Length: 100
Image (cartoon, rainbow, N blue to C red):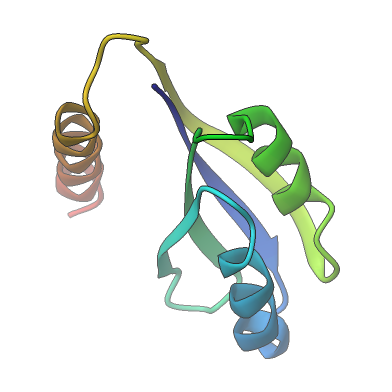
């Protein structure tokens, strides 16, 4: 199992269209948007027939995405999705605490 978290930089006025485009990429899940609408939080997971790297590249080259930043990367071939989701949620909670 491989998982990554990205920040995708966008223009506020493009948010709805970019979110729809990103949701069509295999393994991509949208987790939120910055209050100013200029960044999307994107989780990317590997799956049958595609790799995390392919999906990261697809996010980066999506029209109206101005840039991407890799915020988190995890690889464990023996991990279950539940374990990874728990680790992701813990990491996200820690980041939110730091921002408070």
